[in-house]
Length: 110
Image (cartoon, rainbow, N blue to C red):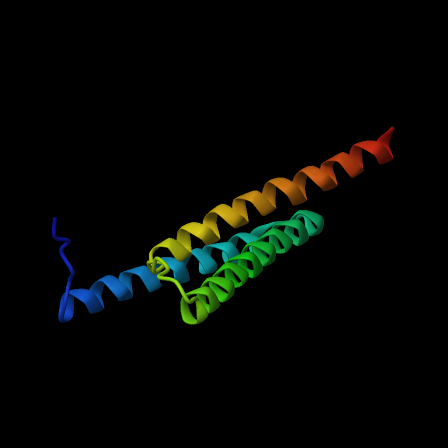
């Protein structure tokens, strides 16, 4: 079974669309953060975004070293997996950050 690999102009278009999609996600986060009136909610949103970014950087960093210095054959991580990792880690960070602070707020009210 052979896989279609784009080359030439098509590969540049696909790479540009992937980068534009990731960039637009950051722009949407910035717009949403500037329009939020609640300072505490904004801080929690930005904290979860930062956690997702740091987690993605950590995965990319470790996997790069594994690919570079491994003595056994290692599967190459496709570039399109990186935005998916970012989305999953950011969603997980949102769940953790917002639940932890919601539980803390409920304890203060009691």
